[in-house]
Length: 336
Image (cartoon, rainbow, N blue to C red; front, side):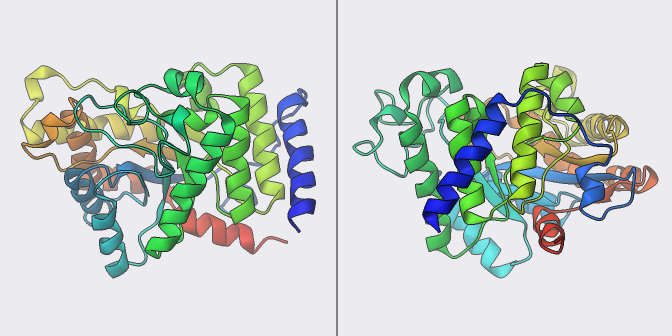
């Protein structure tokens, strides 16, 4: 079985990286999954769960008191057990792995689960993961990447939960061909959906300045994942972290909420038909969080927007269909 899988993956990756004439199909992946034609289907997704107590609280608020539908967990981080214990009491939570290969904050850091001795290229002189994507690319080998993402999946399984999907912290696993191969292979081997914008990819092209060649590679990877029996995204909205919070409203929850909700309403209005994941970083910031990151107002405003009745109303008015990774995998499993 492993021998056949290896041969299959080799063929897939050759197609993925060298086939240059891929065309966008007429139907979206959302339609292939059984959603109505021209429907705008959205996963409202919370990143960075497990990073801190405040991150957990923000995600829980967004998922249980708001309209967020999914999240992903940073397995090397210290507050993972707290969220896993919450999930044990709330088994319907849609939670994946935020595969983590960077530790970006100055005074609050984490190292690889695989250990410095096993994967020395993953760590800096403090013994923590590199703070930037570029440093990880410069120092880590694909084999070290592979060992670490397997270790993160193994920890999840040992803690008693099966991830609904895989995604990539800071986009590191999509930074090189070799890293992407290991990312996709992990999903296929374990039959876990992989976050990759592989349909029309309109927003990724606009927001991330993706080249035509990169979009074509994503589309070929999407075909590989689909043919392996996994669901695929049409697009990815990854601009929310860059929405600058005006100084005049910082510290005022009511104004933060109104500002951020307006931005999210504009975002959903800009979506094309298909299955889109919108990334956010909901955090219930305390006095402690400012010692972790200077992104507290951005993260807090995400949480407040997800809990805003005005945003829920806008989703309904615009006919947005909310879904989860669990649901789209179940839909894909039913397709012969």
